[in-house]
Length: 418
Ligand code: EPZ
Image (tube, rainbow, N blue to C red; front, side):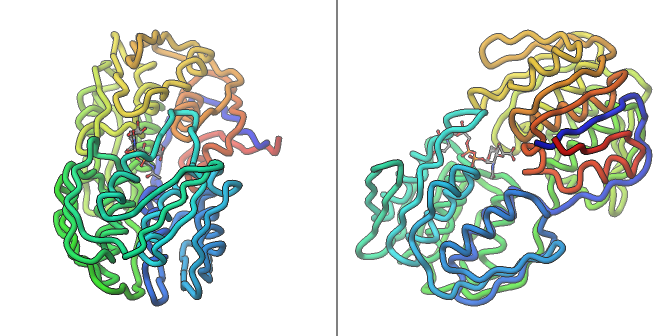
């Protein structure tokens, strides 16, 4: 397995280009199952999960292409089954459930299982589909769904603003018979991007970005050309890279308007952020970083996908900061690895107390999930000496060309085949 070797201590300087958003591209690729014509997507990040999604589309009966950062999909004959050996590698595969029920009236999708950061059930997805007339049985590790008379529009009130659940139900509702209202819907920008894509295919969705979505079902959706939004979590990760190394970066194509909670916390810590017309300039305001308290919440609250990155930064701040993780039950796998680098972090339930130690020492560490691996890269960039990060396949799921982008602004980082 590949690993990354980082010689820390270099203040990063220069410009970094943000790629397309993984968490917008994944649901939009599954939404291609709903379109009767060809879909052409641009600004698609070259990531492992994107390639997995395209493989799933092929299995489900779509012809696809993926060249540079452009992908196309044309459904030529849909099939209802998403197999376990693919779904187990990518939980987001469960997002094919809604489109298959909508197009075929049936679906057989492997239960995604848990992952490092939590159980991540899909009960809210299924309850939403049941409100629309679908019936499910879960046998031999598969979710088997069917809706004999087609999906009907319904009023659905989600117990929790689940991102994937909102996306799955939204895709099904686009082709349901009648009107659907989703209350307590997720407000994440990636959900907005999916809704905008569906509307470009002829759907009738309003309310995206608010917690109430309204969908007037249509009989069919056409193909369209669509550009994936830039990745706000990748952009936020590189903002932290500028601050943690004491350098200055221009983050190009940065969706700054989608990062309010992140920029608020970074400014509170003493990071200086200046939005220009097509980039955001980031550096420390006066050299010192002051630790803060943060709680991860559904959008527009502080994003859980930026929790591990902020924790790495806090290791270099003064004072004690607390991080309360309220979205996932086990998203502190990076803590013990940061402690191996010399961090002073104590866990109490779902709260981490981070005491700034001013510096870290490089050491061998192991990635456990996507954002944990990002926090280890950030810590390694600022640590004294050499940090070796194992199992970086986790990182490759969400960060396109990360070592090229970081080397381009001065980082001493290289990938070694393991
Ligand atoms: C999406 O995951 C993202 N993934 C995650 O990003 C992100 O962390 C998460 O939303 C929260 O923002 C993609 O978009 C592909 P949820 P998702 O459904 O849809 C519970 C990354 O690092 N829940 O909002 O799985 C669930 O267990 C990844 O890029 C239920 O209980 O998130 C979790 O505790 C990691 N029942 C919480 O809700 C359900 O039916 C949030 O889950 C659904 C969810």
